[in-house]
Image 1 (cartoon, helix red, strand yellow):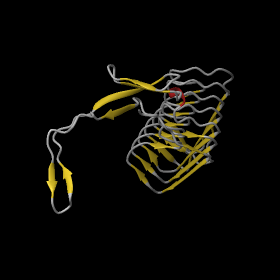
Image 2 (cartoon, one colour):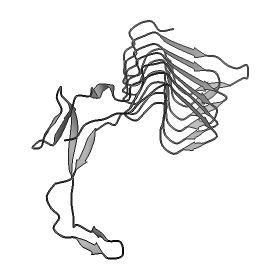
Image 3 (cartoon, rainbow, N blue to C red):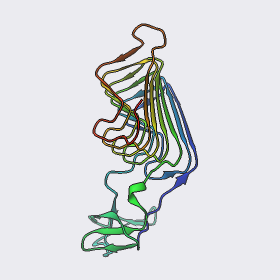
Image 4 (tube, one colour):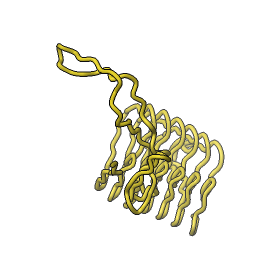
Length: 239
C-alpha cells in the first residue's frame, strides 16, 4: 500500500542576495508543514515569476503507479551484470484523497490518506516577506499559493523594488488565519496593491501603509490601492 507522508520543519529563515530565481519563490514548503514562523528577505534579486511568503501545495496530488505484471522482455549487460530494457511499462496515475482510513480504489485510481489535504504546506506562525530592491516579474503574495497561513502576515516592499503586477497581503487561493499588513516604503508596482488576498480570505485585520522615503516618486503604483482583497473577503477592520 502507499502512505501519504509529509515532512515538517520548525521556523524558517530565508535570505537571498542578488540572485536570479527563474520560477516562483516560496518562503515555506511545497507540501510540508512549517510548525513555526517564516521570515524571508530578498535583496536585489530577480524573480521571473511570483513571490509567496507561504507555501505551495500542488494543485493536483497525483502519483504514478506501475503495474505488477512481469515485463515482456529484458536485456542482460555482461559488463555490468545488470538486467535492463524491460520493454514499455506505462504507469497509471492515481490521485490522493482524504479518508479516515488509508487504502486504495484501484478501479477509480484513488489512493486514500488520513492526512488532511486542505492543510498541506500550512504555516502555523507569523510570516514576513520583504522584497528589498530587485524585481518580481509578476505578483507578490504575503500568504501561500494554496497552502493556508494560520497566523499574521506582513509584506514589505522597499529599496525601489520593481513589481510587474500586483502586491497582495494575503494568499493566492490560500486563506490567512490572522491579520495582514502591507507596507510599500519604496518601489514601483505596475498593478494594484491589495491588503487582502487574490481569491483567499483574511480572518483578521488588514493594514496598508503607503509611505514615501522622502524622495519624490519613490513610491509609484500603476493602478489602484485596496484595503481588502481582489476576489476575497476580509472578516474584520481595514486600516
